[in-house]
Amino acid sequence: MYGINQRYFYISFNFFVLWCHAQGENHSSPNFNQYVRTQGAMTDQLSRRQVRVYQLYSRTSGKHVQIQGKKVSATAEDGNLYARLFVETDTFGSRVRIRGAESGLYLCMNRKGKLVGKV
Figure 1: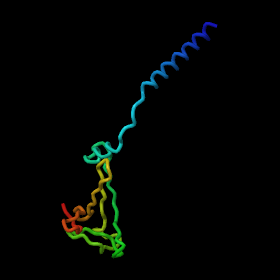
Figure 2: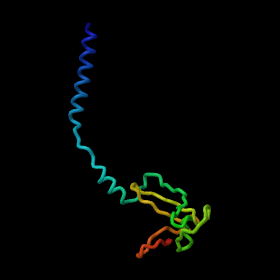
Figure 3: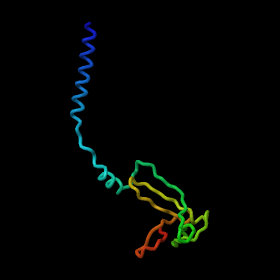
Figure 4: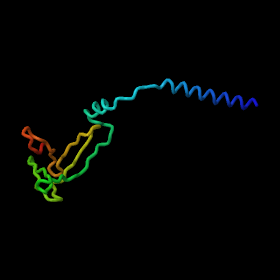
């Protein structure tokens, strides 16, 4: 009989401690928008860097985008070496860099809004 009372006290005490602990944890929800904004602005050294190979297709010309030197055009056939593009990401946010696999130059936009290849 003594063992049942002792077990009842032990279980009741554990529930009381759990209840007290749960009452003390009334935290407001975190602001994830601010976290994404601050973390996206800097390079993320902890996450794995992603590099994927793509070919960008232009519906206007019916060809693939290529970076040949500083010239960017949509005149490449499927499988062209200059049409292979590396899409790289190394930040927490959604920023990417597009680099020509063969030329090694990045896809950029000049002041006039024209696409160019740059180092």
